[in-house]
Structure formats: C-alpha cells, structure tokens
Length: 231
Image 1 (cartoon, rainbow, N blue to C red):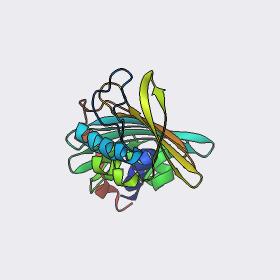
Image 2: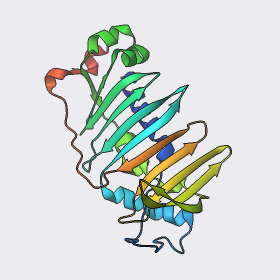
Image 3: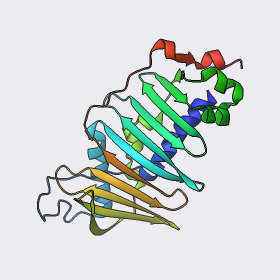
Image 4: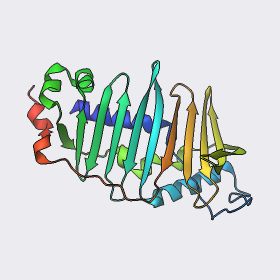
C-alpha cells in the first residue's frame, strides 16, 4: 500500500545523509595512519567495500524536520532482513520489519491518519500491516554504501568519535557539506556522518558484523494490505 511505501521512504530519508562510506584498511594501532598515501576518494571506495562485507550493522540517525527532528534506529541483518523504528514530529511513531519477501509496518494513530486517513487508522490500530517487500533499498548494503557517489572528497584533520581516533573526509556541494568519520583504531569501520545543508542531520554506525534479530510478527497481530484495499 502507498502508506507502507512512504514509511520505507521515511526510513531511507533518515539514511540519506549517510549513503556511501565506511572505514577500511589494516589494524592501525598507535600513531600510525592506516590510510597513509591514499586519496580521500580511494579511502571512500575501499571503505565502502569493507562496509558491505561486514554483513550487518546498526545506524542511529537524527534528521532535521521543521522545527524538530526525526529520530531513527535502523538495523540490517546478514541474511538481508532489516528493522527500523522512527519517531517523527510530523508523522508520529512507526516501526518497520522486512523479513524475507514481506514487509510489516506498525505505527501510531498520528502516522496512519497522516498517511492513510482516519478509516485506515481505526482498522490497523495496534496491528502490523503486511505487504510484499519488492526491492526495498532500505535493506540493501549495495544501496546504503555506494562509493560511486563519493567523488571529490577532501581529507581534513583527524578527529575523535566516542574517544577513538577517526579520519575525516569532507564532501562539499554548493551550500551543503557532508563529513564522514572513519575509524582508525582497531578494525576501521565508519563511525559517524554529519550533513550540514537542507537535510541537516547526523548518523552513527555500530554493531558491524554482529547478529541482528529480525522476526516476523505473530499472525494474529497482522493485517494484510489486501484486506484494506477496498476501504
């Protein structure tokens, strides 16, 4: 249903500022620069490959929305399934699960009234709405980390993120500046992205390669979108 597709779009929007990069190289202990001699673009390309190879991750994002901000937590599992929770001043609270060939959406009354109207909101209260998961890019590592979108980067002075050293890659386009932070200690994964532009926001990554539990809801908690088609 249209409401389901729009919710997936919201999840993707929360990730919009972070499409394209994670850290990559050797262990990088001490003061040694694991990216020494590499251009910023090359770091981004190698980092993208490392990110996809990790198999799973969790992303927390905050994206400006009017006078407030939309907050999302998105997790992708190694098998290709994913889950997300989004709190939006404009659209309310919503949850999404993508399991196998199906997607499920559960949301509060504010979300459903905004997206589908009062009638639908009354029918789906407290229940998951099931629909086919047809090419949902929000679960795809290939879409989340595309190095081909990172050209013309510049490496700036290293910084710290949560007490750990990170390489800083900056991309400027018009009035928009996107900054990527790449871990330089331990296994070098991407740790944070900030975007200062029309879609101002921050995203942090964690849990690379760790198990992510995504399960379909119990049948009694689900309503199929086909049941709502005639409303």
